[in-house]
Length: 319
Image (cartoon, rainbow, N blue to C red; front, side, top):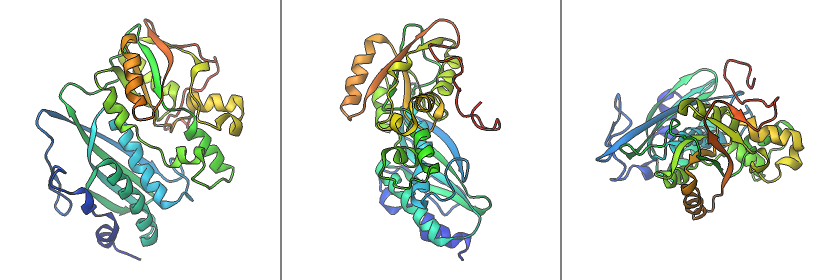
């Protein structure tokens, strides 16, 4: 058994590899708070996400994958704003002081920190139901952040990558598959935040959101914020390879529309900007697919009348 401070010192302390002179960390972990230096002319972008065992990740998921996933889902919010990630804070609740689990969790968490140039600058460890809360901070030039309220009638509706992998991977995990080299399982437990894509879409997209609660739910957030409606072409929805074979046509369509945990970017763009945006993302080998358009009015047209709308906490999951 290990004490709180030993867990922090041995495995959860900031990674020295990310604390170089360009890190912007004036004072890191070890004091009551950290001191950070955003760049001149930059706005600070901040988001927090909590992952609870049994609700957001399986109890038997590899600890290193839980570490990766906890940070990735928070970074996805920065991607949706077009921000450059800089720092993070992490709070970890554990039922027991299991040093072996924490060591593996830390391995996955720090690996993604290094891959995305994010500095862990502090956090907390406590006892309780296993849960991870990650606060991420990034920066973007003042006034340039992608928001939900910029969609306009006539805009193209598009999504990066492919959909349905989160729900498809969860289904395969529940069916007993455990090989994280498999596409669907990797999409579910090892999501890749679209950080570079978000930055490339700044100045091109009129609105953006990450697909975390399901395409229909997250599109609804954009439409509500922007005061517009949308028509969706479900035949154009890009699906993760193998999704239909694994789930069947009906369940695969449901996964793409409402499954959630995809962490792709859903964006709106003026028609004249779409090809430029698509070429920009092609430079990083990422597809941008037109899946509909924005118009005056309210709601989403073109979807099955009985389609689920996505994840909602405190409602038993998906309505």
